[in-house]
Structures are given as C-alpha cells and as structure tokens.
Image (cartoon, rainbow, N blue to C red; front, side, top):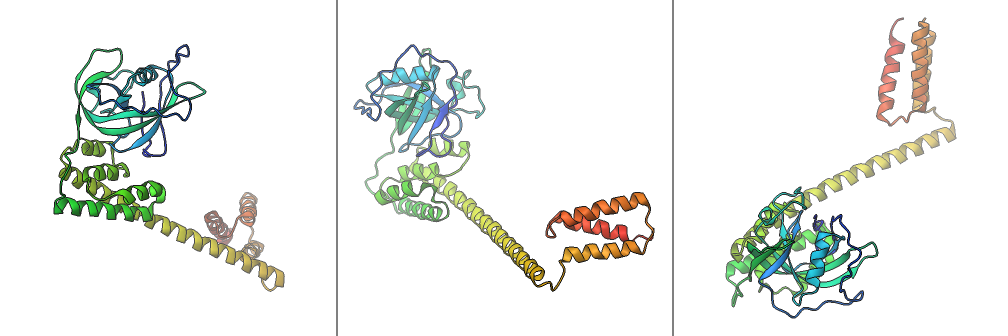
Length: 345
C-alpha cells in the first residue's frame, strides 16, 4: 500500500495503491455528506496503515483515497467499530513493497486518526477524511490477518504557565510562519485560521503545525514526531521552519531574477522589431541582416570559389536569411559564412 500525504496535508488527498477488488461486499457507510462522530475512547489495539512519503502530525485533517483491496478491508472493519480509530505509521523505506511489509518495517511512533467521514467512490473504494488526534507508539504486534498492534498513546503535558523560553520559541515560530506566508501564499487560509486562534498556550501543537508546513525530509519530520519533550520539539521545529524560510527566500530571489531577465529580453525584442519596422517603412536603411548578406555576396564576386564550396556557402546564406538575427544559431551561421567568404580560394 502506498499511503502518502503529497506534502499538502490539508487540501490534497493520498492514494493507497491496492490492486485486489472485492465488489461483492458493501461498506456500512453513511450517506454522502454524513459525518461519523465517534464518542468512544481510544482503543488499546489499532489496525495499522503504512505511510510512504511523510508522517502525519496531531492536529492535522486530511482526506485519503483507499482503493478496493486489503486496506479497504481494514477500512470496513474500522468503520464498524465504535471508536473509528486507525493507526498511521511511516515506513522506514520510502520505496518499500507495501504488500510485503510488517510492523518491523515501520517507525514505531505514528499517530492515531479518527474517521470523520467516508464517501464511497463510483469506481470502488472510498475517500476517507481523517483527523489526526495524538501520537501513538507500537508496543507489540497482535495476531491478525492485517497489521494489528497493541499501542500506547502520548499526550503533551498541559502547561499551567509557559516558560519565557517556550514563549520566545512560540513567538519566533509565529513570526517565521508570517514571513513564509508573504513568500508563499499556498497555505494562506489555513495559516490565518490557525494564527487567529493561537494564544501560545500549546507550543507542542504549534511545533507540529509548523513542521507540517515545511518540505523537510521524511526522516526530519519523523524525528520531530518522535520528540515527546516539548522544548526539544519546538527547537527542532523552529530550525526546520527557518530552513524553509531560507529556501523560500532563495526561490523568490531566483524567480525575480528570471522574471527581470525575461522582461528585459522581451522589451529588447519588441524594441528591435519596432525599429526594423520603422526603418522598412521609411526606406531609410536596409535591415542589418540584409546588409550582412549583401556584404558576403560582394566578396564572392571578387573570388573564384570551387563549385562544391559555393554550394555550401549558398546553403548557409539561405539558412542565414531564414534565421532571426537575435538567435544564437544566427551568430554561429554568420561567423561560418564570414569565414568561408574571406578565404582566398
């Protein structure tokens, strides 16, 4: 199974590439648009779905697509439970054959996710909206046809009062996110919603949200997911966020330079075309290209050139006539004809 977040956990959905189909079984699913609202506590044991590209973080919501097959069977089992919970864990190897992996092939820290909504798809399978709720760690496998494990959960310790250091970290993260927003409006709506409700009292949640916005490597993200200590986690999150800001600034600089170059080139091109049109309209001057060709023709009149060489020269002059004077090939062709017509044959 390939279950990846496509680096956009809020808007885009993933695909789980499952081949086997079982069209004879129907899911006990709600009508389209009807949400599943679980009220049960988290179970001690979870069915596990592997992630290939990036880990999810608590506080995220993401739609994924599950095609008919083994993991669709898991979805049907979980949909019948009261808790509606499933575990999402990252594979050690991004290219792992997901049909031949076991729990040992997964990182042992992931997230528990609740099913919020299931929308059946016409082609089979379903789109599932999941809410990532908290960190979960695999304790030991439980015998089952599918990946099934006993797990333990981790909650960030509530802070009665933020230390000065944590508050400073939180402010730095918020400031950096705002700077990123100016350079990359991709997550503008989500950022504004989060920042509007943030009061810095949950630095662990803030750190999770921050790293989920970055293009950090899967290993770097997994390291943050496995960091339970809030001070260490927010420190790692800020470092990744600063790195993302540096990359975005560099990307912005490159884009501006390229756009400036293109604008300058386009402006020069249009000015040249206007100048040529004016000259032609007034009959004041011949085009530069025509003058070049005329010069080469005058040289040929003063020389006795072998027939085979003359054939080549004529072909090159014809090519020169068809080329744009601003093109790189024009310069190469012109220099070649210039050399051919200078040689004292």
